[in-house]
Image 1: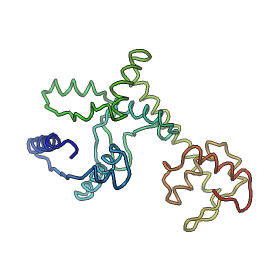
Image 2 (image 1 turned 30 degrees about the vertical axis):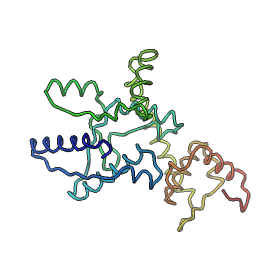
Image 3 (image 1 turned 90 degrees about the vertical axis):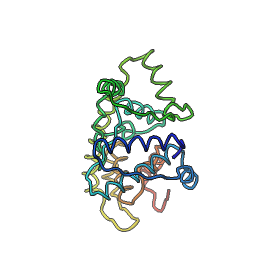
Image 4 (image 1 turned 90 degrees about the horizontal axis):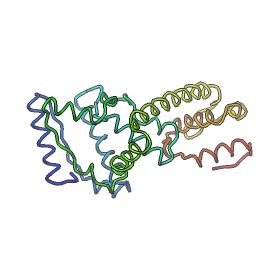
Length: 250
């Protein structure tokens, strides 16, 4: 609902397609700006949160198992760069996965150019959201300014390269998670509401990367969002544990 008549036109276009292909349609209109203000989010974050909440409700209403989004290899490359610029760790650099819980991305292996070419070949009509060209959004600056510059001056195959890197980060992330999960079984000796007891000597025998993943596992058990724990906080927690000082808090 951010583009007035243009948004309404998108909805009408999708309704026509749904009718043509005899598909059920689910629509919902929301006040993104009010939600953004109330929850102190960026416009992009607010729109994404509302969109995925709607997806989950729609899936639940029709008792479906999965929902497919149309993210492409180009979207993946943009996500890797965006997360890198934010200073994300391994999980962030792994970017989007073909499957994440109930969400699947079957077009992640295709470039945007390939899909455009297919649409033209099959004479498929489509609409483009003009906000995708609004350079006030960081994502669009990455898409229209940074990636073309990097492709021209550094690596013409940048999109494929970044997609390979994301796959490597994902495999590495999964390896650390598996090792940390096994470590947690032996290190976490007591669990009750809002409390985790960790066996310090065993914990410190692991390298720092695994220790961080063990801590992520503890945060998860306590219901703390991993994204709220930055590198600085992890460093402080590791240092606190390493000093073994009784009664110290962070």
